[in-house]
Image (cartoon, rainbow, N blue to C red; front, side, top):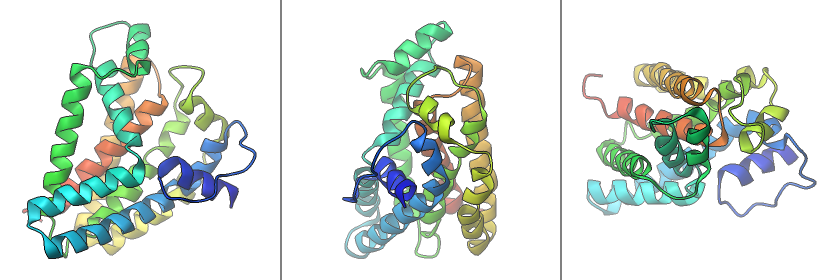
Length: 242
């Protein structure tokens, strides 16, 4: 129960009791619950989408749904995305890229990345139909499962959230955590299975980019992974060729 609460407290702004006696590695030990937390986030966001779509035009409904999604997660992963855009895309040494990612100030690449991902997700949410809107569930759950493979990769810096995650992560969490997104993908049919493949590929690209540019992963890389996977999953559910 402690690790489940830890996962909710790390991933959401829901008013739940905080985990007791935080120990090094607890974020990694809680990671087996990340896909379940993603399912809850996706479920609440889906309900918000249904309510907004009932009373507002599609563009407004998409924006309102995204606003709720951001509030529910505290913008945690968006912060990581912005830091990664600033650092990973910079023409600089590895050490300088890590310094940029640690800097709380928002740079040009970070600002562009934030605007693009927010516009894309809002447009995708506005383009969903009642029969494809359950894709929100898979987007949120798969995005958080895709953090887990990062636990197998080297760290770019010896401290921070990435280091705490790796200290508690166990490889078997990958299989245990995959149950929920895999079940969702199967239930959602062809779009779900394609989303599973495309989302996993997107996560691989992000993690590979981090390894190439900074030699490993950080907590910010986790955030960028979640945002990119959510975005491409929604893309599949809005595609007209399926």
